[in-house]
Image (cartoon, rainbow, N blue to C red; front, side, top):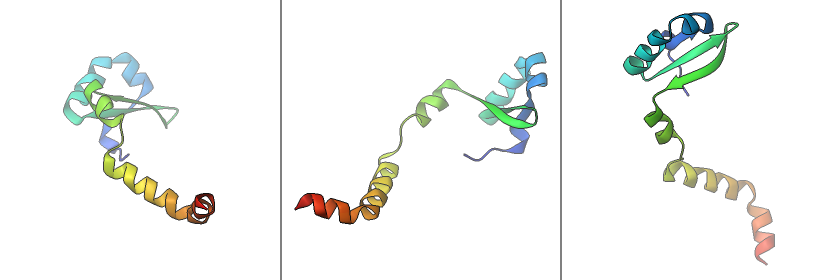
Length: 80
């Protein structure tokens, strides 16, 4: 996941001004909240979270092909 540095805010600022966080989410899509200068929380629109919940068919096929190639010898032995 690519994070734009303009979409980061400290946890102190987020706590003091949560409406700023929601405005940033509305404008930029997501906001990364930092705690002790480390990424800790990601705030995004609920609809975006739903969209990212499932892998695309293309992603699943690519992973499947990679697993099959990596374990080809084992699959061939099991197929006998």
